Length: 374
Image 1 (spheres, rainbow, N blue to C red):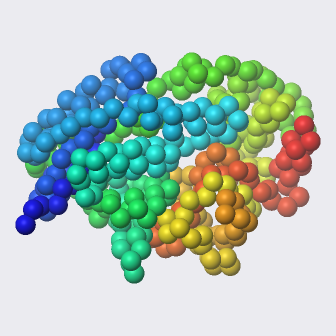
Image 2: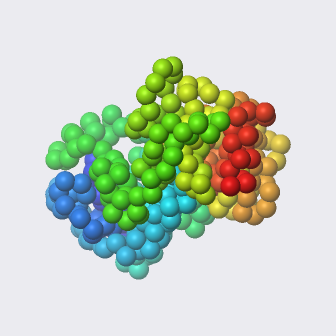
């Protein structure tokens, strides 16, 4: 009987390397696929894709699997990076990892793998897939500190049905130890950080290459000018550092961005009411099962990665929009980020945060009303 062919995204990092080894140990015919998705200023200082490819080839040789390379740079620019720039230009704070997973790692990559004759694909993500009554569920990883289901919520039934996550039941510390025992040269390699496939780099300098600076006023809730910002795209709700505002009292935090007037609104104090929200409106919804959650049920939701699940209810407005209402006020809910809904360990899906719904009679309510008229 022929072994089932699995093509795994082999990035050169320790996670995908161990995942590939585990699949081979389980008896699959494993082929590694190294994806190159960024070509602009691809150098050793930031992207380091050359070294990543060397590491991936070395791992494939040690494990004893074939490896191929593919260039998805055009797809990445068209499907991910263009959206990334458009969101920043519109005053929002996008999460490129979410779109990168949905459009590149589990769409372009999956399509390419099927063309190569693979039955399933695999990655080194910390998450799990479970089949239940003919439907596929996306579950949190066993290692709660590394769980990446937040970034995978846009995966659909077709994608999940063809995906394996070999690390879903392992802890990161055990993955590194396993890599060391196997003799993989990247067992202690630093985890990748920064923008998906672009790397960690001076953010302002990078963004200014693609979007023009547009300086404007930094103002308090009552409209008092406190300073100048370099461009709204460089700031996000809840940001404390880099504002250049001194004075007495508690630190200043970004509470809102008004693209129309090009104003950055700030407040003093981490727990200022203007930073708290009772609910949010989300758009561009994506539900793993294909169906929206039940109304009047209590779920858990995250509005940012590594946040604890916050009890909430989800009320569908239409096929594209919903409102998520929280049991307790949430801090710095940020337009452009994703809200991801869970039922216990099962990731149901989510959407892009369109706007925060402020605490009743809070200063943010007045701010929202003021921005709506400008």
